[in-house]
Image (cartoon, rainbow, N blue to C red):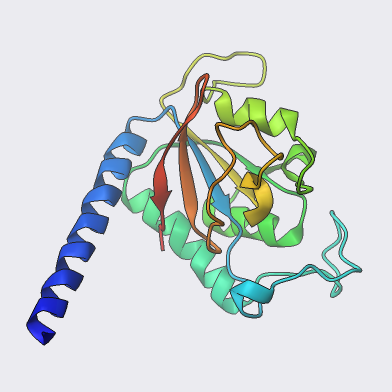
Amino acid sequence: MKKLLVILLLLSANVGWAQDQVLIDRLRQGGLNIFIRHAITPGSDSSKFNPPSERPNDCSSGSRQLNEEGREQSRRIGKRIKELDIPIGEVYSSSFCRCEETAKLAFDRFTTVEWLLIKPGTFQSQLDRELRSVPSAGFFSKTPTGKNNVFVGHAVTFLPGTLSNELSLVRLLAEGEALIIEPGSPPKKLGRIKFF
């Protein structure tokens, strides 16, 4: 029985690695959107509620922020993406500190955007459009660059009613986990990956 369990564990690890490798090969070609949930914050994942005093653009002690593990996770994400030769274009962040710090530590740059602020059940049309759009050479030019755009946001982004039906209904991402989206109409979820 022990041998069978070991074999099953090895097989599942190999399947996971093979799926990751397919995503990595595709990401190296560019033209995809990478949605990353912010890195690790204090507390157990199931009970991470935002403090009532928390506000966007406010990094005071009243906001939920990364802990040291989350800061290290953010650095590992950026380092791993660089090691894998995955080209990165624009990096967008929600205006909550935990997202901005994740983006800063992983990519050393980001643009804070209001359309990554998520209210469950409220349709986010701008984010929906961005996730459908091919990464571009700039705001006014939609010429593909061969790079991947990154969006650092929140676990609730893919709850029903927040985005179009094609992008909703994604099981909550773990902190630091990424969802890879091929833009288009409809957009296609290619899979989830942990770069840490």
